[in-house]
Length: 476
Ligand SMILES: Cc1cc2nc3c(=O)[nH]c(=O)nc-3n(C[C@H](O)[C@H](O)[C@H](O)COP(=O)(O)OP(=O)(O)OC[C@H]3O[C@@H](n4cnc5c(N)ncnc54)[C@H](O)[C@@H]3O)c2cc1C
Ligand SMILES: NC(=O)c1ccc[n+]([C@@H]2O[C@H](COP(=O)([O-])OP(=O)(O)OC[C@H]3O[C@@H](n4cnc5c(N)ncnc54)[C@H](O)[C@@H]3O)[C@@H](O)[C@H]2O)c1
Image (tube, rainbow, N blue to C red; front, side, top):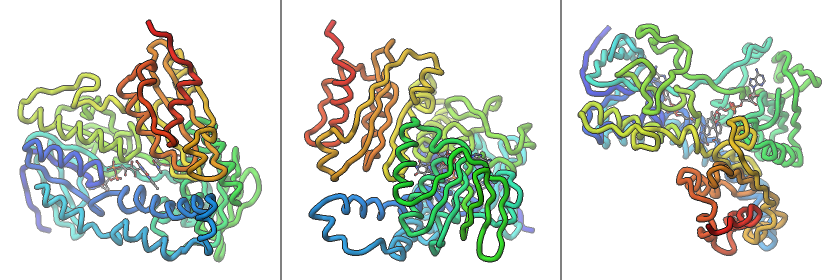
């Protein structure tokens, strides 16, 4: 089989959003860069995660907003058009073609080698193409692993044989099943329950622990209530015991009874994609996440970086891309002997991963949060004050739709007089979280936040209400 050898400055394994950004920043920093991709350039996010899932969710959100607004509601005379929703989803995934992204790589001056990349030695990656041809890539400076994550399939009797859906099938389905059972209570489970219920499926969610365990519990409770009010069955504190597919249906035995559905989606978390990466060739354990310092350099190496989902720091596209900007820049800086700024909050350090990670859960209602929850902040030993406010009491919220329901929480570090976290739950709260992120990252003192005046009548007036509820600190 044909074999080729090439030497470049940087080899990036994985062309998801994170790998693309590492490569782009390094190329802009003057490095000859090659990226390796075994599936589609653009990664999970573009084809089977962020983009298609949000495209499936958005039409129903708009529809319920219109239905909640007299004057507009009268114009809504039909139900959701499932075929049109799926068509729009397909356009957001470019029909699972990566031509556009490949063009972008070319325009950015980044080389592409298609195939599975594996570390085959120090600063060396061997790529095996589908036809078995190999390319040995030698990096003058660094190798960056950005291979993302893969779904976890729990060891439940009969589950694998039942041919369950993963998030890939859920986000790329060509038809909506009559009924869908979902195992898991995290972000994928709740977003897909929201989407499929709106698209007309009978949805049952089997949740081992609580709903949306990574955010404030009041947010998970509100999402649960809202989904139940739309007919979704949510079984909490329920173990899945066994699964069997018979004929056209899946039968799931749980600690709370039997659930039957046309399809079953498993959404029980993800693990780093490192099982088949040649890690053993450089003394690392296959299958484990790659631990790094804040410049995303793998512990114990001076040439190996791990960026995005694969390092397990934060499994979110925007945070992975933030890491990628730091990593691409620092790889170029180290290669060119330019100054490295790796102090906390420096240009080459992904410091926000520890303090200010924003996340939006696109359920109805949405959940938008940044920083630790109250429980996490207390566990970190922080002296905090928690301020809660009913979002329905804000003029802009009431104007945006009738019967607006929502909640907001601000967490203040009392020792430093700064906000360290915030959570919003309600319709369209996604756009509120960036203001919170800015305040957390900027460590804006509460007394100065009083001078950041939200416009009237917007939902952002929640900021004023939270500050009023906290109380204005007396001037020194
Ligand atoms: C259903 C779902 C919805 C989501 N929605 C959101 C959202 O709304 N917002 C958000 O911020 N995050 C969301 N996420 C998380 C987001 O998808 C990930 O955090 C993001 O894709 C991580 O990017 P990445 O580049 O690290 O990895 P990936 O996107 O997984 O890309 C990794 C790439 O590496 C390639 N690869 C792997 N191994 C090799 C190898 N050995 N050789 C060559 N190539 C290889 C893969 O083919 C892939 O293209 C969602 C996740 C799921 C599952
Ligand atoms: N809008 C977004 O930002 C968005 C959307 C989807 C996914 N994501 C990211 O993708 C990642 C993966 O999402 P996810 O929902 O798969 O993971 P998750 O970690 O959010 O949730 C996993 C869920 O599965 C449950 N679980 C774990 N093992 C189980 C088992 N053996 N049996 C039954 N239940 C079990 C957990 O209790 C939890 O409820 C998340 O980290 C998330 O950040 C983000």
